[in-house]
Length: 449
Ligand SMILES: [Zn+2]
Image (tube, rainbow, N blue to C red; front, side, top):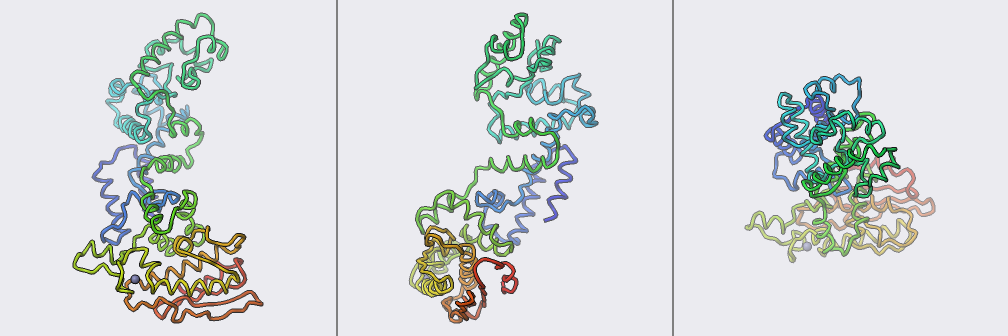
């Protein structure tokens, strides 16, 4: 997709907010493109999830806008003295560093930024991200002590000495969520007894602020990133990833549906399952097919009956049971015949006894495979093409996904090679296997997909 870089260029160059209307228009365009102007079968927010969480890592434009504009805030933290941008923006702040603006009360921040739209927008972005991260009610450990308009004694020169001694933020005075004692600060930063009054002033400021922020002390993931950042390369992507990880959507509902059909799936196996099609083969059509299967997007007779009550909910192949997703893929007698026949052939190909159930054949889990089985990737690729045969004949009522031409075409055990067909006349899939895993990708070049 080349649209995202074009938009990112604009997002990164213009530190200005976009209206919700513009963002929803952008999202609407991409949804319409993905679903070919048909009714979406899956929420777009779900498609935007990272692959590990079951999504397709589709771009979320509002999130990219936040991440791209957060890049400017990262520059505030880097505080490069040669930056023209920083010196231009900070002229209205009367010597207060730009990053301090993020930690002062909203009333004072509004007064300081009233003539500067860019600064106003940056504060809006900052607050949005803190809300998303769940740190809006936390007293940030990065709150400055010196040159902080909320802490008036900090504006005086006395606290500049503390800065030179290494005390710049509230985090420097806190250890394990509690304020250090004066004696601890004396030994840590070399303070003298003359600093005792300043210590009480700071302590009063922190305790009074903690009452306002009922979430206690906190350092958000984006703040941690900004503190460590020394160059802006890839910063938008890093912030976008942090925001993506915060998304509450996940594939647990789909996982629950599969578990009711095939038994418990542990979380690690599910995560691997969501990633596998993206690792094993590079074909986009394979990714798409596997994604649709895992997310149960195919319209079954049962689902179609809900959409159009006049249509029957019976399986098109056996005409005797409700056409649920699991029935259409596995438990239908016609389909089951196909799987049994196929598993027999796989036993010949791999030269071992395989007792495969829906966990392996449909989902590609490994727990049904015999111990020490070495050709897992190849087996899953072959099973993928078997599933494709069912998908191709999804709406056919004639039923014979069963291997009419699905006989084993050739077996050449001494040379460790074989070839076989796994589909009927609607879809000819000829998989040639020579040896085990080596070179399979190259050979798949001749596969008709
Ligand atoms: Zn059936």
